[in-house]
Image (tube, rainbow, N blue to C red):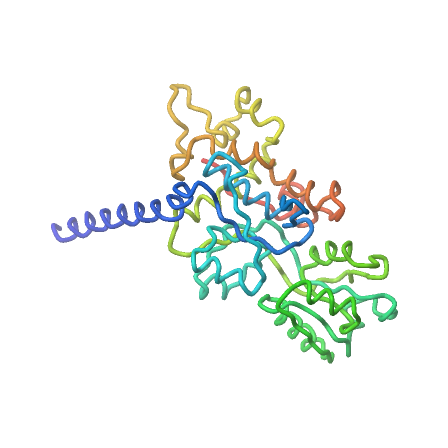
Length: 348
């Protein structure tokens, strides 16, 4: 019995030490530095795109700002690090960035053998194809693509998905792969390939940037599941929880009707216990709600994030939805109560 008790005490001490070490990891580094370093794409409309003054916009960018607001209280305290698909995981693994928010697909191998942890699914996507209607007038479906040359980017899930698709459909094809996205687009527009393949959301964005958008057709089908979301390093559970619950907070806020415009009013007037817990409203006795403390943050962590970028629906609508040039329907990215897949645990 004494031996078992000693083992339990030792385990508790080790657990406390591990928790302390995790808390003193990325979170402490970000606080000491005073800025969050966030890996993003080099430019993808709707997700992460800089303007001429290097002001970044997009869903992935907004998520970075939400994390900065939750952790540092200021969404402006972000350094955006543009990365190619090939560079992104090395940058995260080496500690050059604190979080990767770069239209990255959650897969088993990345989850189990790359030292990565996905913190949620910001966008449910799927791989598709775009074709030039002048060069390939008879291609209206992926089933019409036998014998075509397809361009894509290296260091992504795209190459394997393309190989799987053409093999399973017993169709011939030729693949041209490039390190950089602008090289892929140039090859496609120059006619070196008949089709370009990437996430379907990216195809809609890239089509608008092409020389003659109306001459290009995004085929209706998708050939894969591409759950895209933010990524952190394995081994720092405290930081993982912060990034994960920032995403959860944005989705929960939409469920509860909390927006960037009404968050302060909701905090001061709502009697809904779910709203109060999310926004860190003290209990009747004035005691702390405790959910921010559990993350190692201030109690207004979620309020700061929502105030900075809005809830998930606001982020979607502004960057890729009907209020954006892309005009992508919510579809699978609608809330679960509206027939979509966006569903997160409650703050309890």
